[in-house]
Length: 268
Length: 264
Ligand SMILES: Nc1ncnc2c1ncn2[C@@H]1O[C@H](COP(=O)(O)OP(=O)(O)OP(=O)(O)O)[C@@H](O)[C@H]1O
Ligand SMILES: [Mg+2]
Image 1 (cartoon, rainbow over the protein chains, first blue to last red):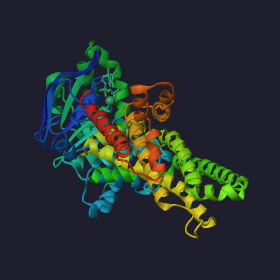
Image 2: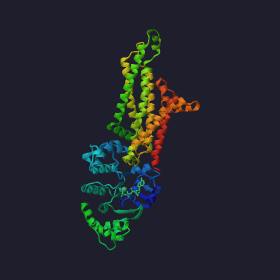
Image 3: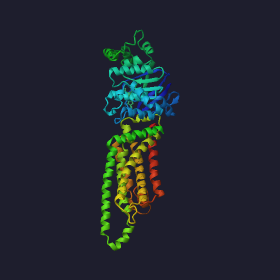
Image 4: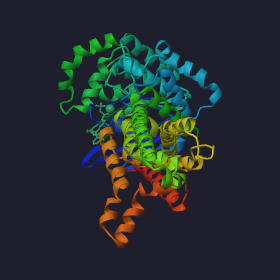
């Protein structure tokens, strides 16, 4: 469904994404991991046709992002890193506007807005002015926008940032229900989220792919002989720090106490 | 074009829920009223000072529409040039600043749909602003009567005058839209388009000093010079072409600027 090959993105002299290649099958849910500045958002912007690649290609649903941007954009729902909402509009007007941009059939727009509002849990704020909403609600309005028209591919850049723990759990449930029929890429810094929702994990560091595998594959590769269950989040943090820190496991050990905390907030 | 209509609708929604358009309308109405009463006053003084003998002949040639309405419209032209940058400044720059540009650019709309939608909304606001000015000739016709009992106002001249003002407004909005697409700062967008549009408006100053080709060039470039025929009741092809070429150029450059984002 998504094919990225030798993708490089350079901002003047800074290389944000460096020769990145990966393939995502239809129906997969991919967790996109990497430290700050790793190039996650940049990759997503290229995939959605917002910025061009310096070299390499990206294909979504068989269409080249650069050659046939409209075909790609029609099939992708995108939640950018900063929710693209208008402070002066109500979420209802905003979603109607987005439905127009996405050229959804007019008669169904009302029902579609209600549907995504319910999924993103913003029914109660639909008629308030977006500028007065809290950050979490603005994030959810952005999420509702991405879900409009039920696109086959969803690219969500840190969808749970700013949400309360219960809402994070709801988004997680939402992602699970979308899995299978939709192809999802979501970036996050919350490792428990990846363990609970994603089938595969893609770790990038300084623009380069460091690993791309299923959770089981990662465990077998990086923690050989360890028995872990998916309720145990600590293992992912160990793997993650192995991949992105030069120190490897030594540097990873002090992280362990925090992992218990993040598992607790995970609310599972 | 569904995308363009959605954008135009949203843009109008923003214009009329924020103060900016209302401020522009009020400023326009206030200054137009000032100029209007000033011109009416001047006309009355002139008529009363005229002696009954020579005056009769003069008065028959002296025309209320030319003296009051055309003068009013000429000064309204300046306010269009000044107010347009403030009406056009947010169009694209604000989307970039608020990062909603990313939404537009990742939606299945062509760059030209974005340009057309934004421009359409800008034209509607400009049309409303000019409609306010159109109220003054109507007021005049209610209180004045023509020499031969007919209407005191020549509606044809009023009509061409309004058309000229609208074309001027259309040109200013196209230039403003383009400038707005080049920056993330609405203030910069407003100032740069104000400078460009004022320069085009007053470039005839060089026509006074210069001569020959320079003089012709300055007059040919000037947006105020091309308004003259409209205010005198004439529609001349070269004037229409002048304004429409700025519109076409502005829209095309905006389209390139937005499309160029895909390449940068
Ligand atoms: N418009 C830009 N101009 C110049 N450099 C940029 C631009 N956008 C991003 N970068 C650089 O590209 C690199 C990758 O940034 P990116 O936003 O993709 O990281 P990220 O993985 O999303 O990080 P985070 O986890 O903090 O969101 C960073 O070094 C960043 O400074
Ligand atoms: Mg990011």
